[in-house]
Length: 279
Image (cartoon, rainbow, N blue to C red; front, side, top):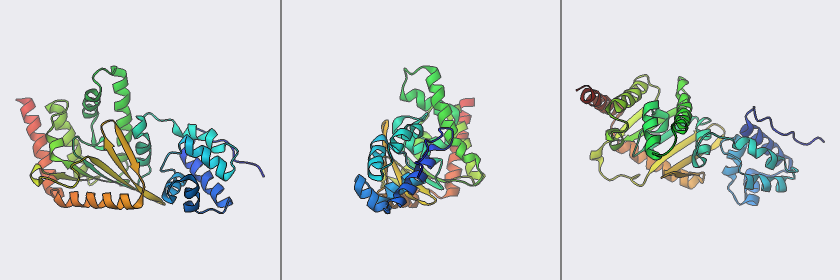
């Protein structure tokens, strides 16, 4: 019987790798849990590889080739699926966003990438690395705006963002940039494209003071959570950890302002920024 063909990089390599992995696993008569045990990973991790919501790393490709007797197929082809324009620690997250049916995000220090304007993104990236050449900054901004085009679809994915009031009051890029950024968010909320709530400073101590988090749900694959630090981050797929962090997000929602009050605050801050800039 003919073996699997090498993947065409112009297609969707992660999806094709995942489909081939599922067929190879089923040919061996293994469940996702059983295959995961042989790789020392969870069954949900195997499910995410098969669904294309997680990237296949070279070390796992080599193990899969050995366990499933694939003759080096996964090792040869995982490089095609690894090409990305995003920072290494974030590449898998950006690709997972594109396949998510729902994204729930808490941002404590800045407006999250999917809600940023180009000028705000430019100011953020310049602050991250003041010595980076301008053309590199523009590439980063273009990548961020490409991610935000997920919201061009009228309904998918669901995006629910809890924004810390501190992020809205941190003047990033100047008052005109902030006014535009907040009006952009308000416009998306008024068009019912996103759900936005503000966690007010008056809420005091809360359950997610240690950092940002992003929960992603998928059709036909287990959920993921992304935890972000300074130029670093990690994806978590352990069901118990995901459930615990979903509860953290629920507590944040409970402490945040209602959608109506949040929108009123965002628009008021936008007007304040615009007024001060004009004056």
